[in-house]
Amino acid sequence: PKLEIDPQYNEKSIKYCLALISNAASFQEDCAQRQLQDYARKIITEMFNDIDVEKLIGSWNLAWGPQVYQHAPGTKIADNTMYVAQNRENPNEFVIAIAGTNPSSTFDWLVEDFKLKDPETGSLVPWDEVVGNKSTQPTGNIAYGSRKGLEALMEMKDSSSQMSIKDFLKNSSNSFREPLKITVCGHSLGGALSPLLALELMESQADWDRTQSSHINVQAMAGPTPGDKVWRDYYDERLGKSTNRIWNSLDIVPHAWDEDTMHEINTIYYPHIKLDPRDALLLKIALGRSKGLEMKQICPDTKPFPGLFDADFEDFKDQVVYQHIGAYNEWFQVQEYVKIYNSIIGSTSYN
Image (tube, rainbow, N blue to C red; front, top):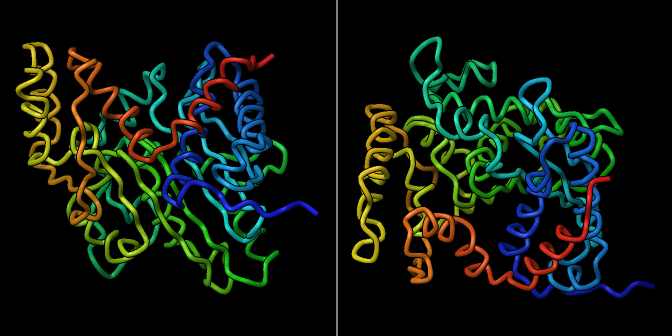
């Protein structure tokens, strides 16, 4: 019999690791959707079958996906990716992992990351409109780009089973006597989309979980604000207690789109780095986009982990990238896992 392995990493680091590999398809360009999915599946499966990975994060199976969303025909890259991991030791535990921004995707940058207002209405999108239910209490509004990202995730169907994420959860909740333990997690863009997907799943739980006993948890990392203050309060009332929001004090991404915290970006690396005029102008434009929208972070009492300035990166943009990615690898202490992941990425082609 196979021995049970106690993972070396703690729960939060394991969720970070599972979220990290949801980005596998971002390493490929000029590919059809199926090729990107096959490539991501190959990477994730190899990671889960690696004995050294198993020692670090425990035993996991790929249960659904990975599914890639492309916003238009002819798009040759992954705009969004999502997959579900199942714990082999506790099979009723599932982790839904959502990829971050693909650096090569202009759709990610221009729409999902930066488009706050609906182009047709000129305002944020009402949450009631997104989930299609009328609540008796105010539910607030979310960013237009966040809505597009959530829609992309909800549209996805597993290429072999043809099940959507809700179909999959319904099938799973019918298969287990005990309640499902679900964690929705993501970093960066995935850190903004994971609370949205989790809240959508909670609002529609009666559709996929007839006993409504499944537990929904969230680990949202390094994400910008998905919604306004009213939506934030609505979210926190429902999922605040089961949400871990993790962010670095020197990462500019979680400072967006709250006007108060965005002002801090001006001097975030002072006195080491001062904003040059071009970066200052970009920040001013970004501030203009969020003005008056009252965007607020979920779980506002969550303190960041204290970021450490890295003197190796003297350019503002290089420091930004390090604080948004490398600093999290170090804080979660997952360098060994990242090394294996990079090695598998480096030795795997999609053909």
